[in-house]
Image 1 (tube, rainbow, N blue to C red):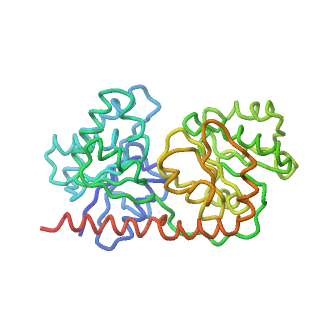
Image 2: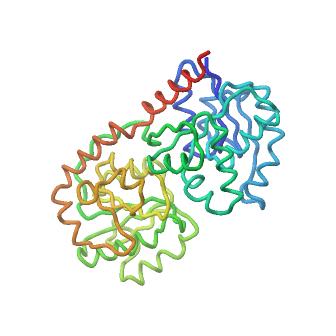
Image 3: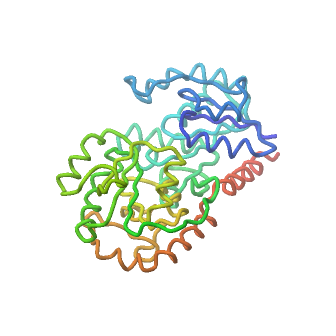
Length: 364
């Protein structure tokens, strides 16, 4: 039996997905320490006596430094748990807690760390202190996981030992897509500067000038939500409900079923962040048969061969004239992208391989 203590933000659906995959293994006894509280789905997965909520509020001043105030509670709890593996998610926060808890409380459990993206791609560039901390946590991990080859290479450059690379993929493949609206575009990344929703609108405006029948559903919320409708109108786009004839609809935050309906209808999916690893949203879109239009990031090039199964959009500009040629092959592209996700983008087989490696490392 492997006793694994997950350490992360259990209000995140991403940690919940990890917990579901780990709890499904017959030989795993799962414990979870959350820096905040717990999403509702944890109750059916992990008994209350195996959960610890540190109730940290990230909006409070101090950031990750303030999170360290929870270390005494976490360390004492981990000592009682006596886990074989301390599985930390997001290395510069929860990875730091796991490393310090192991040192201070002399825990026998070894550390495995899962990188989430900005902890590797952005945090080490913020300051020398962050870079030192990231390197120290990576060296403390017996094993780390990455969701792209590009990020895995960065982790090794920073001192990671063994890195397993697999997509933070889908729990199941959706049904094959039915008829799609050929000029419906969907984007659901956060409305925050790092995801560059302004560029999504700029790209779509170029498309709309070429194809007036084009429509864009822009989902999610964030700090830029109030400014984006004005940008759309300044670009000459009508804003409102697509069903009522508007060119751009701001849907707000959607649940998984609502997102699935937009994926199923849309022919195109736009994701143009300035920094990212392999995005679950892009994998979902590909699985639903959407043609992805992605920013020119290394991880995106692991998913899209420019001009073959989607487009890589350079920062210098976008040529909407490239879309009709892809649209002519839309069904072929949809089938190929779904096939790729089925082979490389499902989460359960990846976690099975991860657990197999933990068993090997746990063997006497």
